[in-house]
Length: 545
Image 1 (tube, rainbow, N blue to C red):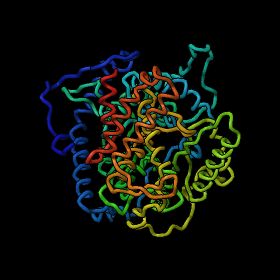
Image 2 (cartoon, rainbow, N blue to C red):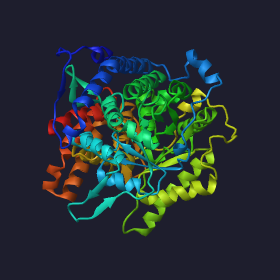
Image 3 (cartoon, one colour):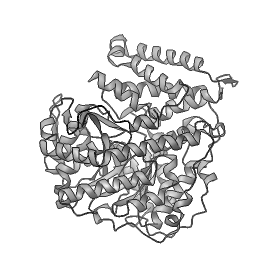
Image 4 (cartoon, rainbow, N blue to C red):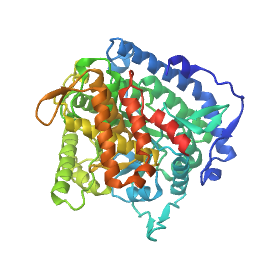
């Protein structure tokens, strides 16, 4: 998409608000008052959002032409300045273990009851953005704020309710690049970010403020401090409109794009009234590294399994995040442990838990104030590690010494092999996840890992990178073979056949695997690397609603 296309004005009627879909609970969520609030947000901030998306495209064009990401000379005074974010409320001071998951009602209850300090309820990568899922998620948020979140499973009659002590809720809206096609403001789809955030704060902000437990947010996929500035302006506008003191909102920013890593100080500065910290969104960060440097052959990465946080650009980024946050009195949150319990295989289960423990030990020793897990069974594992090595509620005031971290450090690629096993894993995971997403599921267990949209993005961007740069792939015999689009399609057909044979023809057709493979293939083998797989997938999802 061109920068011009983003800025084009639709030929639509002004001053109109149209709900272009239906879902159970929509009358409760999209009330006339809520719609008026959303329309105000979109009309006030939508044009600026589109300008910033156009700026992303223009900057990527410069990267494609040979420029490399670097620290901004015009904001050096902010990086070198003496300033801190506003004080963080007591309820957010101990974040040693956070669990994440979709806004599904039963999963929300289980996560809130898991023993984690925080629960990130995810309207973004862990949720497939069907209109039903998005509306049901908002209904669940209202019930939570009202103290009425409970669930009875119609299949087995089992009841789920909240314990007396639960995790603190943090909500992640969708990113600036996404739109909500089921609500049209003046003929144009509303920003999905403004839709998710706006509905949540409109219905629940004052109640959560009164209870002293919010409203708190995670902000995904930003690429610049100017995008953070826009969020800050949205926060201020919303708080004033709803009678909530400015600064009540606290937001943690996921640093999950390569350009944002060079603007961490600036992002915190723009959000300093509302900032609670930064988070190492490692999976999306790997994807962004590939996407940003897509035309630079010297930055081709090996198999995903060899791209670890303990070295190269990932280690540099995590250390810079800790250093930046603590110098500004903000929390430095670690990344996701995607492992899940392995049933009926004690050795594999022990190995998975050992990987989680080692990863969390690395994080707490490096100086992180907390970490993420994807499954309730992993909360005690991560909690034990942080309890042993972090005696205070956080490490914000720790006096660690960090080496200088340069542009070169933040760009240093991992060394390693590209293997046929890695290629096949990317293809199979990409197909299986995309199919699940098209069927309304955004958090999916695959090969004993809890995968979300970032997984599919890594999978297809690595395929594109390996084809585009004619990478050598190590096959079973130990020989190297150049990876091509033709070879990719051959493996794709083999993986589809294996899925069909495993689950049967009927489940295969109902599972939309052919459509998933088509979307995955188009976004992995085209001349240009599309910015997001979820954009064409969302168009397909809409046609299936």
